[in-house]
Image (cartoon, rainbow, N blue to C red; front, side, top):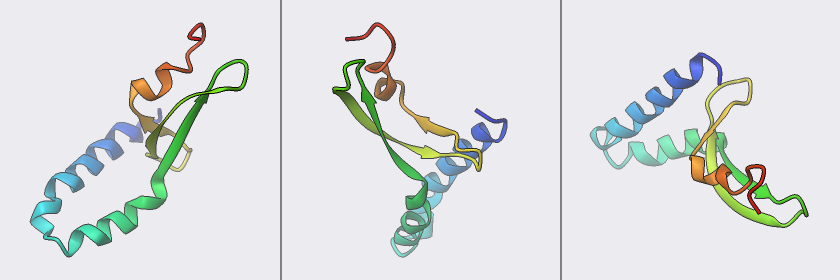
Length: 80
């Protein structure tokens, strides 16, 4: 991950934490703004069968994505 990644993650969590302060009207606008950065992650086994899926989000212009470990865990070498 690039050096800006942790900053962007912290910034996103800050925005989500203060969204109640923004009120209900601000939440739809925030969702519309952030939606293009959300991705679906699908893991496949060596034989091409789908092992699992999850979500993540882009954190920078280079294409770095943040997701949870369990999303990628099924696709690690030696697993299935």
